[in-house]
Length: 465
Image 1 (cartoon, rainbow, N blue to C red):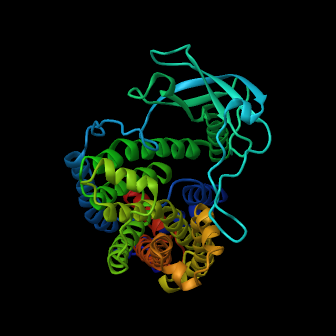
Image 2: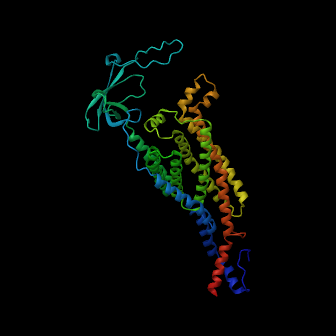
Image 3: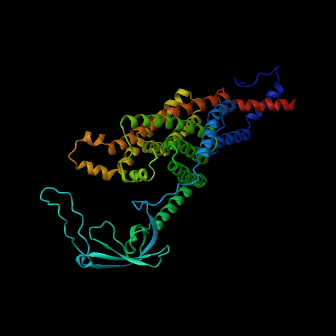
């Protein structure tokens, strides 16, 4: 009799002996092993005890209710209308198509010389003559009331973008401008390559991830919908950007994690770890943005938004961007750590909390090193032109690093990285506590299935009696 077998009130050898004989039968052993292995190795995460379910629910249900309440209260109902300024991206657009491209001498086409480069040694700051043939591009308006109308644009040899016959373009439309200046080429139409790339991405996710990949794509669509239908319009309506980012980011986190990984204790622990790390990122971001006197108004896009909507708090917008930008990487770290703890427990059911935590932290340290490097390189890659400009400047490294445009990216990177680093021990500790407490409630014997077999034997004895 194992230590987990129920203590009978009176000796019952006849009932006990058949039970042990049945336990040792090959059929029963195979059935038990098959059911146990598939329930944990190939099926959903093992359910936790009733007590742990209540504890997790006591934390997450009020949080989810608060998030839903925030969505309802702050739901904007769409972006506020405004008059287009005609500056940058804030322009009316029309579809267009390149009809023909003809090469000709720039002087004959009346092309103006390029803007003079900054004066330097051996330069007098005068306009440099146009070198090489220019391109006379005829463009047709393909949408709107002026559909079918054509206009020409002169593309100089030094231009970064050249056009081909039949190419689709995006036109900027200025209704108040003179008739011959109402249309200009703003950008090229990239719908086909972008759509094809999105299709290849979706196909790869579904082919490899199968049903879970489908859920991941659905969660991605819902997350993007929440971003465009709630977070952005709510900020434009004048709501606090930090509050909107916290509520919207939390809703995205709950949808993405539970839809992709299931409604179970493993996912709930990842949610708790992500939530705690987001709180740290919010506090650190708010502290250092204020301490470093960062305004968040460091590029043309932010300046245009502030001009169109002066009531938007740009500093809060910067902090909101840090939180949302860190959310995706945080999900990856917390889910990975939680899964590592669960799998370690499955591999060694007798492992203590301390052993589980130590083993999972060794995995987590490798994860920290790779994720932090990835995060830093991602920010560096996005800011590469800016870094190139500073590398050729005469300022020292400290001057460049503490300038607002660079300091903003440094604060963004370091605050997000600190949250990622702290998420590993926090999530690992929570997962180890939950899985250890759960296993102790399910099994206190030397074999993880002992109590289940004891209950089965008890049930057979009761039925026999």
